Length: 347
Image (cartoon, rainbow, N blue to C red; front, side):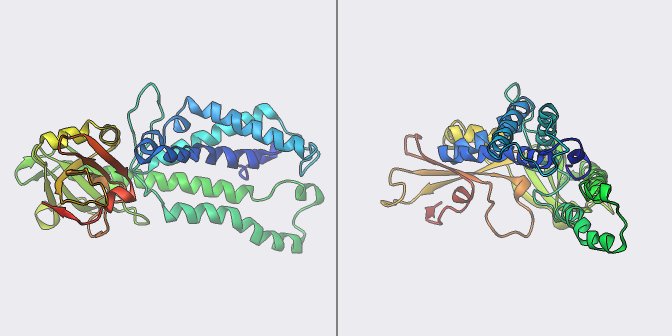
């Protein structure tokens, strides 16, 4: 955004935009309060419309402090900093962060604290190589071609004083929006295909399609019916789903006092408010005097939107609650630690 033209309006624009675009992820510090606390506060205040101007004010304040410490020097003395405009830029960068996080299948809570509801567009993978390549090329190509421009004398002295790379950056941003448009169109086709079928004679209560990286026509579909969840791959180029050929069925687990106790824990409430297709697995622990000696039950939470077919690795965004025999919380885990609990259980 800076190279697309915003850095021509005020000094310190690129630094302000860069820091403000990243500042929202400072909420990762909440993980020091524990994995459950971190899940509850990740993509919360700093990723909300209310938090954007406050985070922007902090970023601009930091930029102002550095500017003063540097003796009020900038790269171009003829382009002074305009602090009101820089604050607007910081807000714009914060909003761009929320938009980018909204496009993937993790989601955001932009209306926090008025609403804790998670929303997501589900059109691109959490780490999308296509977008990374496009944006990287938008930054490096002008540097590669600047040597050619200097050799042929294509720019006069006045133009050399202006920031470079405006055209490439603009084209990169337009390519991002075009890719989102393609992804959105194919996503709608995939969801429509899932909703148009029944599954083992049962109609779908809801259906979702989640992206694979790179390929905009391949989707991972999850369907909920009254008694089970169905998961399958969908090709949006030929949006016809054959559930009998590839469908993976997971029946909804029966509610027990153990699962109900796990769901009422702090981690259970937080996880269920975030997960889109949550399921639980309950297991009775063997006696383990070393790790969790007081735990009698383990309840594992997982979200089916991350159970992509063909992946044998445990889900990285799972959660585990250990309970005692009287169903009191012994330990709570979220993330890799929760997903990769040792296989020391008795069913």
